[in-house]
Length: 117
Image 1 (cartoon, helix red, strand yellow):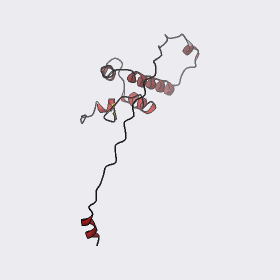
Image 2 (cartoon, rainbow, N blue to C red):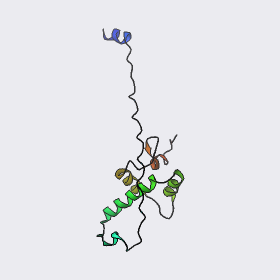
Image 3 (cartoon, rainbow, N blue to C red):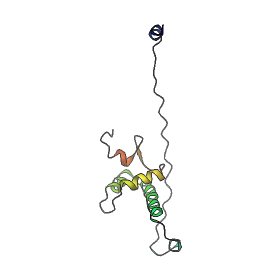
Image 4 (tube, rainbow, N blue to C red):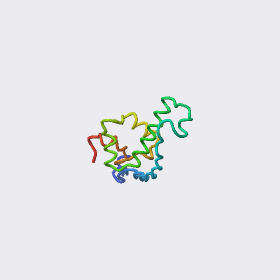
């Protein structure tokens, strides 16, 4: 009986529709950095190493969001101020809406992939 049903009605498998790609929000305005020992940062208590790292990663995400593709490549490949994968993955975790995306993957991961189309 079950064979007859399968022959009469073939099973059709449909892929679910792809979710729409969200448009990235415009990057926030970058604040000019004050020189050391001046402004309100001089009065603020010293940050813990973890908080300082987190702040550095958030600044990296804002910097990448405000940059063109060529500028981002320069940021990824800069020899003097090398950005680590740890910093990039932390920035992606903290500010995913600011990180550039290629083919649904974070740009810095896609650029290191062999199967980039």
